[in-house]
Length: 235
Image 1 (cartoon, rainbow, N blue to C red):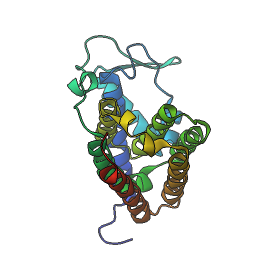
Image 2: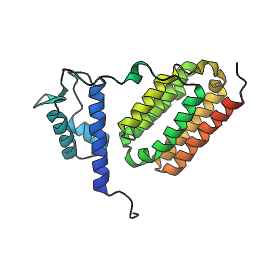
Image 3: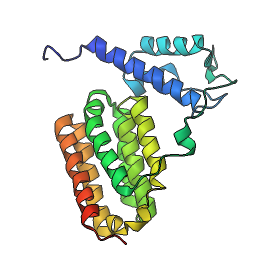
Image 4: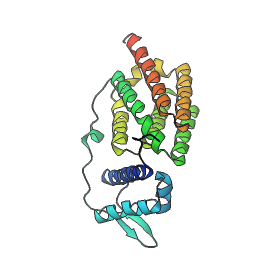
């Protein structure tokens, strides 16, 4: 371990903070609505790769903040009442072009690889694999785009950084306004197959915990797409 490498305790604390931030954000945005039952301590510990003691500390903090109720023998539930307002981008995502979206994906996915390698659990990789299998099964252009975004969203979620997840969700919302339907050449059968192979390679590199290679692979992937858009005649 290098002198600057994080200790086991520091990694646990970082993951614990990410878990707290993600659970709180989900409550505030209504992803976990009032009355919803949260996963058990054991399930959260397995999901985030931390001890149940750390999970209890997070749940105690959310309880003290009035966001959840913990009921012995029943479970943990989201409380009702006024929650934080939804961010404006969830209602009106910024307008952007397909090129803008791909440039943003290149920055985000290259950067997120290091965090995923450091923090992803077996459960995270299982969800990525499931999303990848959907990419293989879906064969219409619109469905394929949605499946590809869903796969990458699972990758970003595995970074355990709620801000990065929110940024990617904003990108997904913005893509509906970016004119993707004009870029049919990017989702032709041959391109879909290439994208599947690329995603398989990316997932394999993440599983092997090779963050540099995974980041470089994403950079090449989106650089290729950017070059295709730049060289394709505008309609």
